[in-house]
Image (cartoon, rainbow, N blue to C red):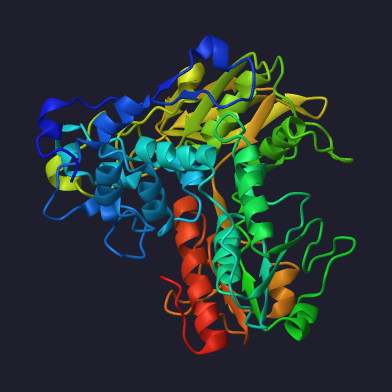
Length: 485
């Protein structure tokens, strides 16, 4: 695909970032797109592999090679190289409802599995994907796809994150009457309330929601299902009105750090901190919650993943005095062993754009207790650990901290309310039990996909599961389906 000798003649050239000194002044996106010529040159590097692992293996396990939604990457690279952008958009959207999301925030396992990654020069697949969809929006190619006939079936989708949005759009396009129930004021889930605007501005979500509304999807905002919220809908009432219900909420129960001093003021979950800033940028009222701000403070982020990185970038933009990130795992190697890792996702040192903005990173660190005065946190008491996560004697140290953000991941969906009231069976990890064969839960007419079913994962996995769940629901309702898995 592409130019047969392109990978020999053209060097990898990817998007650049606005300089740190400029980008930390606001919460706007700062990735500088490649020119059309450069993008086509990068697409020309795709080398017509015998086995293109970038496609994805069809496995349901994260960490396996390639793209979870099975994007036809060599095909759209060839189309871009030949200047056929509109057909590239059609190809890309045939497997991915929201490439504008993944083109911005996906870690790109496809690039890790690219054959050219054997010598650290993979095709810039993520950049090309983003260029295709952004050009499609700018050119007006992404019209609403309205079903020619209605089925008369009604489907409720609970949660409007990427899994819920993908399921809802697919179901509406085959003629079902789809209603999405969202407890917050706007759609998007973690895309809107977790991922900072400097990684993805929220107008990106709004235009896709507008497309879905034109396709017949009805969004019910500020409408929680289950739980003790004011105005909450009883899940049993949904079962009476709808022919099928899809549970597509997230894995919202954060992993805590129950150590001495945890009760001190100034220690917060990342997902109490990040949504506040997103609401400020989106001019949404914070309500009666107490503001959490990093301005002028020594900030410590506990957790080395993407959420921790988002806390760093947000803290720096709020004007933190200092930001330190702690990770209990040892520092990964600077380079992976290709012979052992390729085409799988490798463990190696990565530095996010936020970490590059000025955070101090510490590895193999265990926080043993918090301390402070007047009820406020002032210090973390830490120790280095060995490869079995046991404290190394004599390696104890202290860190100043006026704000501590816990970003250690999520354990499972919230059980109280919706899940307990429905009585769905849970798996050993506390997620909703449903197989990837049909996404059906233990309760008739109730399906589940995304993080609520699989546990915390990537946006691209949520899109995959939402699409497959929609196909399963359509099959259940109609006896057959034309929706792809």
